[in-house]
Image 1 (spheres, rainbow, N blue to C red):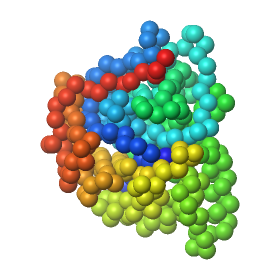
Image 2: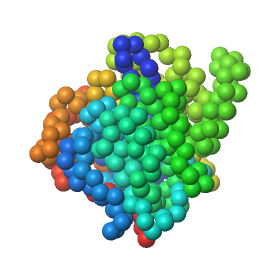
Image 3: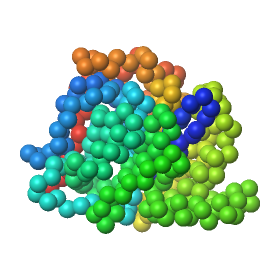
Image 4: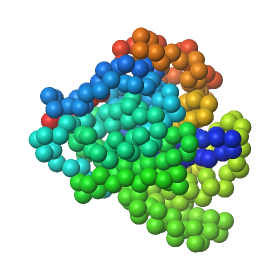
Length: 326
């Protein structure tokens, strides 16, 4: 379904890239969201409740679930498919959070990876999941986060248990297998050497190896423009061409869009596979104050944008996180 890569440049330049792969149109739009938005886990009376401490720019599918984004502190969150995910059963006591709110909860509440890990390892909620609109299977996902220091954490639920991988070294994530096995597979390919041979299929494990090799050999620079261009070339290399889907393997589907989050300069780049230009949102031009309005940039009609699109967002009621079907 997706690939995610973090780039460590010079002079504290940190970039995170991701591709979104899916077999059908996800009707994705971009949102500018201020501080002070009141939210719930959208799971009835037992839902967790919070008020956003930080503003964010997010990519929301169906205007119901943030799957990717960066907050004003430079924390980035990416949601990727993981077929092996198994979430804990609700014990009737814990608060609940729909899967559609996982990314937004993290971006709203935390400034750093370490803050998020300390809080989320306490398991303040039980994640609930349901089917995507028009899709059959329930969503099974894992979460990656990164911050301005280059720190990373990956959150997976395996056999009902939360597993957290926390290290600046964990700069690449794809889909299946679970992250522990991804690391083992990559160790094998490291022993062969990427200049000798690299796996070239669309499988998640092969994308992990290619993303790891190419991102590790990218030139280190303190200049954002060449670094963004270089990282885009790597995430494109790990993308799946339009029109290619494998129904029996949901991890293999066309790449619909790609993003890069510049966590030092606070610029969020977006590239649709259907349109010719990469465009961006410059956080320095965004009003994230409590009294500021939420705004939306529509992408569902394959609108063509270029350059800084911050002024093109239109005031809108904040998108509503969708609860899991009962």
